[in-house]
Length: 100
Image (cartoon, rainbow, N blue to C red; front, top):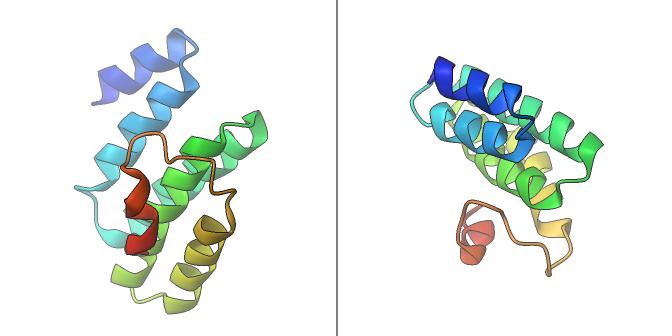
């Protein structure tokens, strides 16, 4: 995983790096997973990758809830639901937005 992130970084593949990070978050403890998602959200928002930002919010909501941080989970869910309906989460099915 570390090598995959490094390779994506060297190649300038920000979105691929985001997907790797979001997938890796699935095996982390909830607080670390939440931090990873929030890092992806910040970086991709700054670069205008709205689909990756949406995917980050969807996962961050899940991990915040699992970490016992209901207010943060709700904030991420609100961000996900407020995203333009034409924006798809890049690596999730569109209906997964409603799982939050």
